[in-house]
Every structure is written in structure tokens, then in C-alpha cells.
Amino acid sequence: MAFNFLNRLRNLSSPEVREEDEGSPVDEEEGDVDAESDIEFECGDGESGEESDGTEGLDLDLDLDPSNEEQNGPFPWSSTLHNVEVELFTQRTGPNLDLFDLDYTANPIDFFHLYIPDSFMKLVADQTNLYATQVGAPASFKTVTPDDISKYFYINMMFGIHKLPSYLLYWSSDPLLRVSAVAEVMSRNRYQTISRFFHLSDRDTFIPRGEEGHDPLHKIKPALDLVLRASQMYYSPGAALSIDEAMIPFQGRLYFKQYIKGKPNPWGVKVWCLCDAKNGYLCDFSFYTGKENTPMPKGLGHHVVMSLGSRFLYKFHHFYFDNFFSSVQLAHDLLERSTYSCATVRVNRKHWPSQLKGNIKPGECFWRQFGNIIACWWRDKRPLFMISTNASPTMSPTDRRTKEGVVQKDIPQPVLYYNSNMGGVDMMDQFRSYYKVGRKSHKWWRSSFWFLFEVALINAYILYKNMPRPNGVKPMNHFNFHLEVARALCKGVSKPRTAPEAGPAAAGIAAPNPTEHKRARLLGRKKQCYMCRSKDIRTASGRHPETVFGCFICKAHLCDDLCFAQFHEKIQNN
Image 1 (spheres, one colour):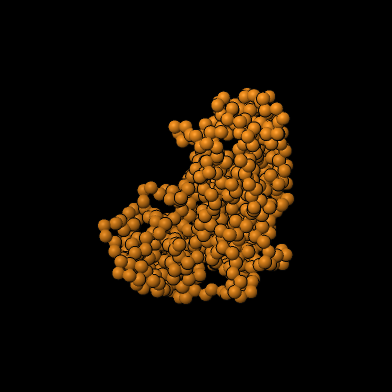
Image 2 (tube, rainbow, N blue to C red):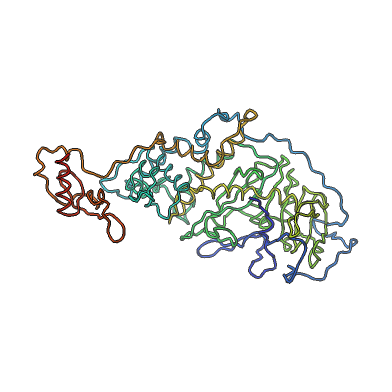
């Protein structure tokens, strides 16, 4: 699936977009809400038609005189252009083999356990049992074991492979809906019990909001620490790194819930992500929980890029991010730390060259330069503003699909680099969308935990895929890797046992005196009548008759006296 990341760019001057200073979100009562960070941009063949030219509200007094240069301020922009010098990236990339004892022949579950180890299953089981005790579980509650948690994770992985409207349908008596790979591993009641008390941390240690030491991520802290630490340790990314936000869908009440217009899931918990631009490996991430007390004199976007990318500074990496984060100051600060960048930018950013505003014709491109910092203003169908420190102020040929076929067109080199390397986080989101883990929840922390679980699966797969292997030996694909992890979590239930046919108990059939059998109300929920099911008798709705009555000795559900008599006559004849 080809991505054109500039297609998401929205016109800055649209009245629906708020222009916040340095892109900082606005706090509201129910959560911080920020505008979609990208400017809409559409690549085309240069025909503008009747569309807006994207310059409403901008200064139309265009001055592109090469002799008119900005000499004031910390960034004296010049129209005199020269090629940008970029140092070669020489860091080691790929799996950090010295930190784990695995090779390409290892099982997928071994790679997964680097991120979520077996010890985590015990931790979750202990916290689930503790929570059941704290809230007063019923006397029928059976202690949850690490094996139960492992199978619970397996079932939630199977939800993404066999997709049904309701989780109850996986245990349906209808053979068209029942999923044996789920129903025969754990009973529905047991699954519901574990879901009810499922917990990752001790709620008694939670510090309420507003008090000193409050951690808004307390409920997912154990899983967050495990996955984040492993993601940082076991893989070294390539030169190109993309920084963007990912959304965890959630629409309930939460004070740090966010809204981002244009996202597939616009409401939810926002996560800042830094990914390898070439394969989508999530190298580092941070949950956004609202405004912090940490001083951010250069804005939120500057703070996020610097904090997420702190481990990759001074190594000649190339950072790619959108106009929510970008600023002239950020490009300069990264360059001072031997780190290159390329990004779209909003023209209201501080220190942006004042000459690169106004209205230009499709295909025109204007530049300004300060050292290695390049400011680019180009128009295809709509204006596009770029700032980069790793691309020279030149035009590069690229293939463009048009109605007449594929044609070659010149585009600015920063745009070409941005298109090629901005998609790391989108690639990770694409992996997550294939086989979603878990079901929709009314609790934000459960949705966030399944996000961490999916990150562990995806990073484990990319780690496995990039392991050194002999020529001709191909790694398994993403689906088979996902399936093998699920199979291993099920611990030997790859060959499911045969489901017992609904019928009489063995002790009832062997009863010496059938005349002692009597019809009575049986314990538990109602079930299908054994005789009506064997004769395929159905109600007007197309279902087999159900009843709570049956033979007290045989434990067989029988809807009336006729079925009761026929059933015992069948036993005697056998």
C-alpha cells in the first residue's frame, strides 16, 4: 500500500484550523484538544481549477527580490544558495545480538518474551487475584494462575484473527458462529471472570490526581516499563527516524483524552512515537497526559522531539516530523547536536523568512538558506512550506501518476526526502490495524495495555525479521508470526480437544433403576433440550428449544414429559 504522506497536509489558512503558538494544545475541561498537526497537501499535475490557492489571510505583498535579504535576528536568511554538507551515518543498525541469545531459528514466542516475559504473566495473575480480594470477589471465585493469564492473552489475540460483532459469539452454540479455537480453551464464564478482575498494578498504591506523586499511568506502569525498556534495548534503528503521534481509540471520560481531526480514530489517548522510518520499529514512545510542570520555553513540539530523540543525538541521524513539531529553532538546535531534520512547517512559526509568504503559481519554488538550514516554499496544487538541514536547495525528478499515465516531474529535494521517510509511525499503525488484540473497553487503561501488547508483538516481529540468516532462508510473514505467538501462549492447545456433545451424564445412563429418574429443575442456566436437538426440532425463531428442566439423575435437559419419556426409552433400548 503506497503512502503519500503529503496528501494529509491541510491548508494552514483554513478557518477550521487553530493556529496555536508553537503548536501547543489547548486545555479543556474534559481533556486537551489540539488541531490536526498536518497541513492538507495534494500532489497533482499542476491544475489548480477553482480551488483555493491557499493564501487567504496571508500577506499578498510578495517580495522575492534576491537582493532583499533578512539580516536581522538570529537567522539572517539569504537568497544565495549552496549545497548542504551532510555527514555520513556510520552507527551499527539492526538487532543488538550481544544483548540476547537468539538466532533466526528461534521460535516467535522467544522474541515476544524479550518484550513481555513469562514473569509478567505471574505479575498479572497476582495483581488480578489481589484486586479480586480488594473488591470482594464472590465465594465462587477461583484463583487466577499465570497459565490462565497466558490463555487469556491468547484468546484476546484470536479476537483479531476471528472477528465477530460480540465476544459472546465465540462461545455460541450455533456452529456457524462458534470458534472452537477460543471456546475449547477457556469457558465463557471463566473468561468473563478474568476480564472482570483483570489488573496490572495494586490500586491501593495509586495516588489520586492533584496530590504529590500522582502518576496518571499508574494502572499500566508495569507493562509500560517492560515494553519501553525492551524496545529501546534490543534494536538499533537506521539513519532515518520519523516522529509522529499515534492514537489509542477511547471515547470515555478522561482528562487527558485528545481529539485530532483527520485521524482514523480522532478521539483517544495520544502517544508520541519515534520509529525507524524504513520498517516501523517503535524505538521510543511517550504517553501524552496533558500539560506538565516541566518548563517548555521553546514549545511542546520542540520538547517532544528533543526528549524522544535524546538517545539518538550526536550520531548524524535524520529526524522527520510534521508541522506540529517543527520550527526554525528546532532545526537549528538539532543541527548543533549533529542531528539532521526535515519537516513541513507553518508559516507563522517564529523566525520563518518573511519573504516566503504570499501567492505563487503552481510549479514555482523559492528558497532561503542560513548555513545548512533550508527554507523552501513550493506549490503544486497548494502551497507547501518545508524546512530541512539534510537536503540541498535543488529540484529532483520523480515519477507522478496522472490521467495521461506516469510522467516525470521535478520536485524539491526536501519534499522527496520527506515523502520517503515520514511514514515510520504510519507503518507501525498499519501493522497494528491488521490483527487487533483485545476488545473495545470502557476503561482507558485496558485499551492502552492492548496497545502496549501490540507494540511488543510488532517489535518482536521486526526484530525476528531482521535477524541475520543464510541466503535463501526467508522469515515467516507477519500473520504466521502472530499465529505462532498465539499458539505458544495457549501452551499446547494447538490441537484442541473435541467438544463434548450435549447429552446425559455417564452416571445417569448407568443408573440401575431408570424408574427412579424424575424430571426436576436443574442447577445453572437453561440449555437446549437433548431430544429436540437430536431430532432437530426448532422454534419459530429457528433455534432448538431451551429449558432449565431435565432428568435429575442423568443431568440431561429435557423440555417436557414427552421428551423425558423418549429420552429414557432410548437409554433402556441402548
